[in-house]
Amino acid sequence: MKTTTADFAAMKKRGEKISMLTAYDYSTAKLINGAGVNSVLVGDSLGMVMLGYEDTISVTMEDMIHHSSAVARGAKDALIICDMPFMSYQTSVYDAVKNAGRLMQEGRAQAVKLEGGVKIKEHIKAITSASIPVCGHIGMTPQSINAFGGFRVQGKTLAAARRIIDDALAVEQAGAFAVVLECVPSALAEYISKLLAIPTIGIGAGAGCDGQVLVYQDMLGMYSDLTPKFVKKFASVGEVMTAAFKAYDNEVKSGAFPLEENSFSIDEGIMNELMIMDGGSL
Ligand code: KIV
Image (cartoon, rainbow, N blue to C red):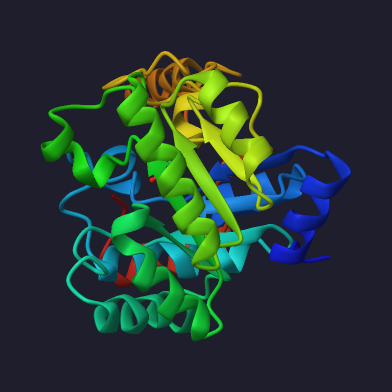
């Protein structure tokens, strides 16, 4: 059964935690979906973990559509949320609606996510008016890395905490069905989670949020370029992959792979005829 934005609201009401993981391809989305995770986020973090950029700034609409449509083919039950990339919505309300529509039509997402609060209230309002569900994203918003001067915890001073609360309220008032809180102090995130009627999804925001999201390569131990404090490694898949790649390399070089069982046969008579045609044996 497909998880919907209404299910998110019902889960918050029942006090049930919401699980979300990122995915960027068909096979991983299928595995995450099969594990029963409620939602898959096609994050613009794909710029870093899939494409090797140092931040998310270079990610394009075409990148997001390409990955989102693959995820949509794999995650049949989880709610698919697709990130709006840098400069696909900040430029105007018109661009925001137009590009959100492309992520739904071409990327087959069921919701979009935008970074920002008070400043993009009108954009969120217009997108939701077009019947496109919106998930907000406030606190440490990676598309603003150059304005923040790095990936830093946000909301530690009274003024900064106040701004994050105002952003949370703005996102909710604009019609978002959920909001991601990234890298904010746990007590502040818990306070916001109690203040809002819509669910909060935390990443580096403590246990008081209504749900949690992680980048799957981080939680599987597959990405080592940057390891934020909030990441818990649930497996060492990177080590397992490296060991398997090494074993393959050794077996190809030693001739141990492929075996008979990995190969296809042909009638010996046909091989003999081929050799006669070619004038002898090899
Ligand atoms: O792009 C992403 O993966 C995200 C999560 C970190 C919330 O926005």
